[in-house]
Amino acid sequence: MAPITTIVHFEVPRDNIDEFLPAWHDNQELMSKQPGLIGGVFYRCTDPDGSFQFINVARWQSAEALEAALKSVGEEQKQRNNDRDDMLKRLGVKVRQSNYTEELRY
Image 1 (cartoon, one colour):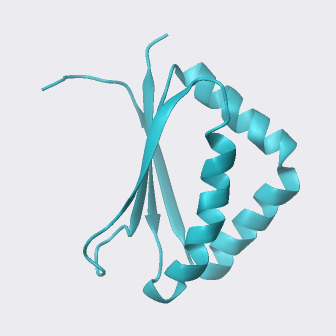
Image 2 (cartoon, rainbow, N blue to C red; image 1 turned 90 degrees about the vertical axis):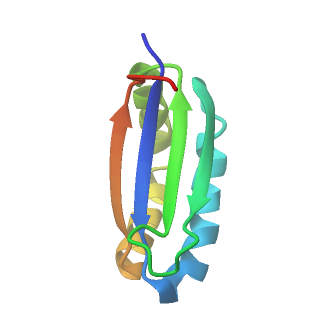
């Protein structure tokens, strides 16, 4: 089981950034308590017109650890997740997530 990095891109309309941020901080706080998380960083774009205003990069001990964390959070926080999904939709936030394994270190 190799470590895995998940990268989540958030395209947030400029007028909705202030409402988006607190909700995402709550989500990150919840995920940070999950077993298997090595660490993560939530980035904000320095260009206000950039394609993705926020990017979340998190490293997990394995794909299985990430899957277990998502399942655990999903089951424990079903209503909270529904509220978050509704909020993302209402704010016009587009989310793209991909998972990666390390190919080359430089």
